[in-house]
Length: 450
Image 1 (cartoon, rainbow, N blue to C red):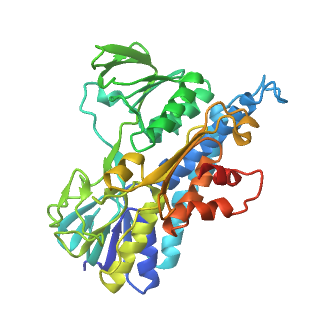
Image 2: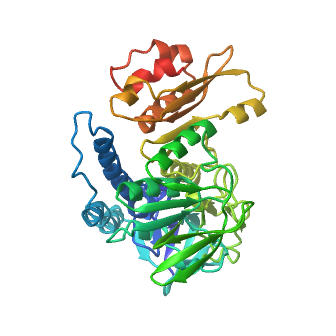
Image 3: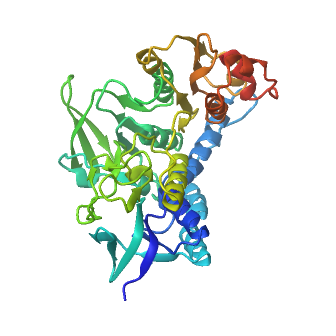
């Protein structure tokens, strides 16, 4: 007899796990399916292990920046094999812990690819699972570049598993993956190149602060080539040759490893969604404002595989899992609001953003002032030897509310959360300026930022 469930979740990342537990707590019969080790991208292949590597880069960078300022940094270095071993203490236990959690909660767990066999059934290995509802939360994967030699590419997952660090690394794409891992690899001693196909990297972040990040990156020895779309990758002896095209003519770059950092796409191509009557496109599963499939009402989608105008971030995926579960349990009533979601590039120092950019505020016809600060000379930067840092805060005229905040420098990854809080609860620049923060902290600079 075919197993029958109230909900089958495809994917064990943040969105899928959240929804599975919420629906199980409500008494539903729930199954969860994943062809990869349980845990999803963030815990196994993304945010968490990446931050372990970034932490080492931050530590070594601060030691080097303070050399001659009271610190002797002659022998400071990153031990790459030891760092990867340390990283695995976080990732290796995850699949077993997650599976045990599902079993203890009474959630049926399946290790297999899922394929729809109809609007209300999927094939999982040798079994067919029927269900009243499905949640697709299968995440994303690196997109195909469609270039000769693409088979020579390494993705970010394998980068974080390398037992030894190659001497020469090229990153394709000027997004957050490339910049974050480039900063780690360079501070671990590798020769690093970033190849980006347009004039400006990190398009989702403030251009003035991106310029500061680019300058910082170049000063630590990262070569950044803009307007350099990659046209091919060739094997050459023990290494690789990356060829680029563009307005400046063809160029080449030699590397031992070439890492794909040029964007990710929804991982849905092997789910046979058309057989399930589920409409989808390049952006993912087509959903309405309630994260419900617009063609099969029994199906919802959340996280990176949903075609919603959302930032592809783990906290967002968790929230979408909550939203999907709420709508499944009580009918469609809850939408998603991403106005105040901060986004961070974990370079050293980090780059952060929340709310509106200047151009978006202008397009909405808002009247606002921009408080732009080069904070390189501020105490918070000088005391730890940071050479470039800055902030930009948009404040609406009349209401005095915060429209957007953009930060580059020490503590940007923490302080941005306070601006997100201000935007969500409509705090004003005056409110923030009058707040007494502990000093000296990253937050104590906020009054000068607004």
